[in-house]
Image 1 (cartoon, rainbow, N blue to C red):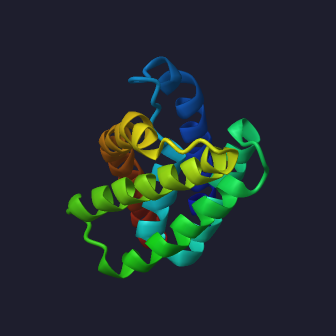
Image 2: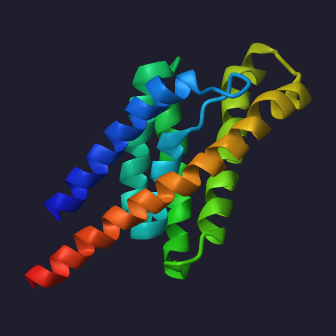
Length: 169
């Protein structure tokens, strides 16, 4: 149990570091993949609602501290996404990548729209089509492509942890 929490925390830290350092240098049209969203969706999908809620809260809180204008906005949206994706744990298929990629893309789309509403629409910037084409769609595509690799790594570590747990028992 402690190993799983430690691995989750280390995964979140690695995702923060990658998102804020390496992927800032690899930005495509000023868009960086949202690895914290990938971590939230992956753990929600693998472990369920409660883990998704807690992972989403922690990822959102880190995101609030790094680049948020108000503490709690990102934590709330990531928590909500983690909780909702947690319902999909009942239809988890180990070898299929289709549902996780749809969940990552859909979550990033919802996240992008939420970001637009809270950061731009509230300030009177009404060019949603411009923002959608130039920010939301590229981020959804980039996050989904990077999410394939990150999802596979997290699933690999999760199976290793659960296998070691079964061997100990």
